Image (cartoon, rainbow, N blue to C red; front, side, top):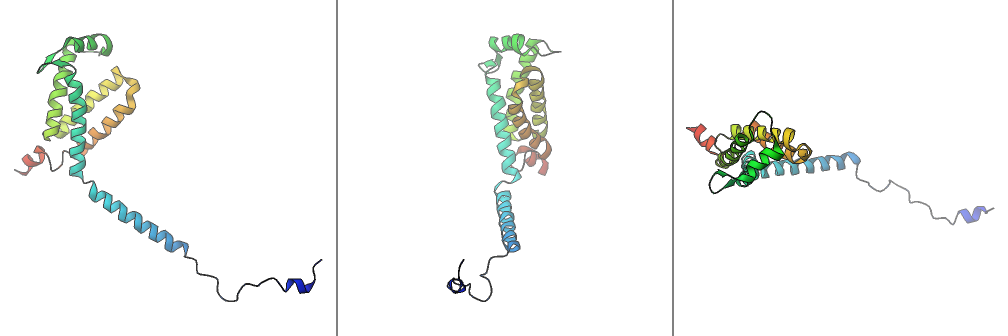
Length: 173
């Protein structure tokens, strides 16, 4: 057992107020303010016109490259594309020859329109329809890829081609 004199040798806490600790509400308010400033900065850095242009170019590149694999020269549908539509794609309701030609021409025309920003909503909607057909009838396991394409195209269908498009230029006249 310890004696009362040994207890007196333990140092005591200084009298007075406890050291200042930042208040939790003040920290939370500062963090919220920082988040809001960062969000405003990111919104200004990614305006609709820039996003629309990037989406148009991204989707156009994907489909144009796919279209180029289906043709020889300028727009002659090649034998491998016809074979692909006959043997692998097997779309219902369309003859393979017709489907191959429609796909090849659409994959050239619609991307060109997207790059120009001409008939943007209609072009994106048509390519979205093609993506749906591809997803349902051709490559159902490729849904993550098709979903990412659909997100880009739905943005264009809903918001349009932006100020950096022929659609906008023609609308102003």
